[in-house]
Length: 435
Image (cartoon, rainbow, N blue to C red):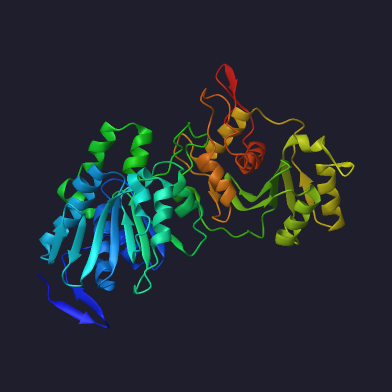
């Protein structure tokens, strides 16, 4: 057992723990609310327990809470892992099992063990910190109850934290990842193959799991990816790590502007085509805006590009009237007024949806494994589309009703990529489109 030291009013004791890189980043995060998202075998339980121990020492004499979705999970997994760490390191404690209250004798801190399926009982419980296991199996109301109870005025460090395995685009994803612009929330995403402790003991650990799970379940549970839980993803080949990279405009290439004329929001993407590579630099998403406002915003961001511009997009923009003109007439007039060099690459009619989707997926990753599409991280709506847009239950049509904000940015990208696809190639005795 390590020697107990008190420094600056905080108790310290050395314990046996060699955190993985993602675990270390999780412990270092100073966010008021933070999460650890990772696949099975990524050390989530260890991260949860060690963060709880750390905060119980920092907040000496105060009360914290450890929770799990159900009481059996709390008792058999979360609580058992926590007690094992205390006992292995010889940390002194007392535990009242009937009340679910553990006291850390070094610091005098109390830790409440609570099941989250009875979250209404959390009312009236003020805590200095709380940590929840398997958050994706917990109702959002439970988390919100605890956020409201994180108000111990004598705490040195207030913190709410959780660990989880991805479970689609649920409330956890929306709060911690999709809404991660808030400084109050931080998330560390662990990756498969990072846990050297497992691989040292079982080198073929992931191969065994791969032979047992279907592809989607393997990607979610073993690789830690966020998948659409309700229907098949339209852009199933999109992978955040492979396709999202910071980009800057190349001065020697024209800027491509691809538009989808949905009224609310009005969406467009800004890209450059470098040979077979499509580089998506930016997106313009305007709520309740007209085509002229989109043009003004485009020029504000990208006006004066010396290599000129190419305009792509929804063929219906040639028919719809806005302020007495078609959308593309407005775009043409705008570029003419600004004396910008521009060409139109808009077809007379839109391609079939399935053909357009295939061209995008082929750029994401071809059958040969080539990746020919990169997207700047500021294209948040486009990235959401590629991650979340799904087919209807029949697997034939894209579901445009589940979320009215979805599909528009990816449609705009599809119009662009379809237009710059390779020409039709004849081979053998039949003519097929090569994507």
